[in-house]
Length: 395
Image 1 (tube, helix red, strand yellow):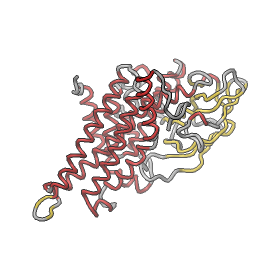
Image 2 (cartoon, rainbow, N blue to C red; image 1 turned 90 degrees about the vertical axis):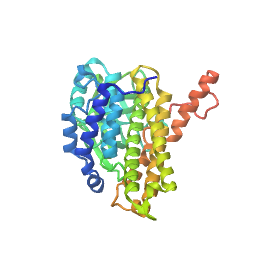
Image 3 (cartoon, rainbow, N blue to C red; image 1 turned 180 degrees about the vertical axis):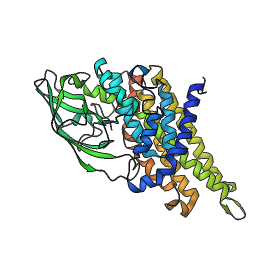
Image 4 (tube, rainbow, N blue to C red; image 1 turned 135 degrees about the horizontal axis):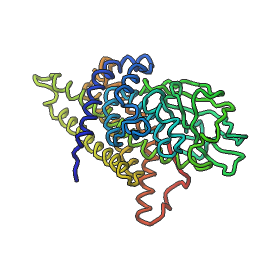
């Protein structure tokens, strides 16, 4: 086994870290307080080639591997988890599904603008009554002459108001194959409006909005994949999207760990730095150990995707563990700082708020355990029987 990053991966990680420290971190607290999307920083990320890092070169991207993309997400999220979420959704949920499931015409029309960062991508699956149970989608796509008419309301859509394109899932009706179907929609289409802007606990610099679709016409050529087979697109997207969220969680955990370590080295009690007190030193040791373990799971899952191996279970393991580690480490970072950690004067309270959602979106921790346990039983018995639920479930 070789755990060493390639020269290209190390170079990307170094560039991302330098960019995060210079362009992202100084503004993170202000963006969090103001609930503001950093458009200027997104433009600079586009100029750096980060918006299409793992998109193939023939479609306008940098052509890097998925592990390099995860390294980028880690570093950006270390500085601002909200910007990390914006980038992750744009790339893994808003762009890569077109690369993976789209026709050559769709790739040529949609992907280059997304890869260059000229447009932001988004992914509209969740509804008020369709979260983990994606098959319960009520948004409809009625078959009409030349395409479809889509009606419905999507909830908690990251990048909603700022997106240029959106991958929308609706229940096809009146066609040859009824059922959940995926579409690529330009956000300038007539009939698209926005409802509630979510006031979130964390990742605030990533806008999250309800999207309303009223008689939105989508031409036949913008059907993504096959009619009635949209859950394949959704589940396949979430398979690698969850690896990106694991990387985001790693970035949050690393930020909390670094801040707590630096604070513990400088803060003195009873005549010595608190880092030299065993109670604090052991916390730091546990925090670092868990981060390293989560990093190995995440990088393994990304490597499996790059190798073309089935990575559903690996991505679920990485997302489950990394998200829980992010929450544990952020919790302990506040504990290391004591009363100071509870104050907005220090960023650990923001890391704590940011970490919480990583156990929820792109599949809750409970869903990840369901995915993993099904895989365990299938490997043992050849059938997932005995695990509650039979329909595909996502977050």
